Length: 204
Ligand SMILES: C[S@@+](CC[C@H](N)C(=O)[O-])C[C@H]1O[C@@H](n2cnc3c(N)ncnc32)[C@H](O)[C@@H]1O
Image (cartoon, rainbow, N blue to C red; front, side, top):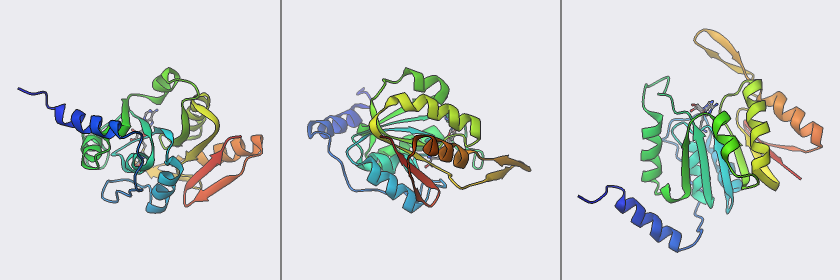
């Protein structure tokens, strides 16, 4: 019996043989997510021709946008079952990447960012998109670990800037993205571009 991945691999080989082709920006509005069309399209613009690191994949709406124009995307998530629907987010992601024929550009890392980021090669990405846990401490931790992975002049995009927090199981869960981004940018004299709740900072 042929290996079921053979057809996928053949498709990927054909795409790789054509070189690091980039495509038109995709917004996958049918994939469950809170990332908006304007945010996803800005991410696709930032990703064009670049090697991208994403932290926080979920079902892959932002991953599809990033991969639509990037050379390659490494995306990290622990992939627990979806809290609302109970659906398997990893299976959903795989179906979404397959449907958009983006497998040949995406490396899916399943696990905690705290464990995976230190294993990646320093200075190997030009864009990082941070959209995992939004409390102050994990944002600071992810930022500290992703910085050595970016090349000089690299770009960091943070999701949920300006969002004070969310009500979660009857409890207020305060977000710390805004403070972390503002302090990071101020300490380095960098400006922050905003697209809805997406904050974009370019490193020197
Ligand atoms: C807001 S969702 C990401 C949304 C996604 N960017 C999109 O466009 O739909 C946040 C994701 O981060 C993941 N996550 C949170 N903390 C993490 C960690 N420490 N390591 C890996 N994944 C994490 C969660 O499992 C969740 O799927």
